[in-house]
Amino acid sequence: MKYRKLGNSGASVSNLILGTMGFGTETPEKEAFAILDAYLET
Image (tube, rainbow, N blue to C red; front, side):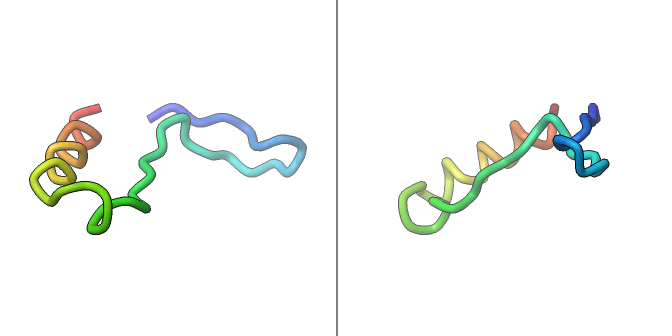
């Protein structure tokens, strides 16, 4: 996984994120699992 510095804080964060706020309310379960599977393959 690649990381980069977060501003001048010195903290390192990954370039890849996964937002899951809509899982369970807006995203059907089958589609949510497909998204998670694709995320884990990267």
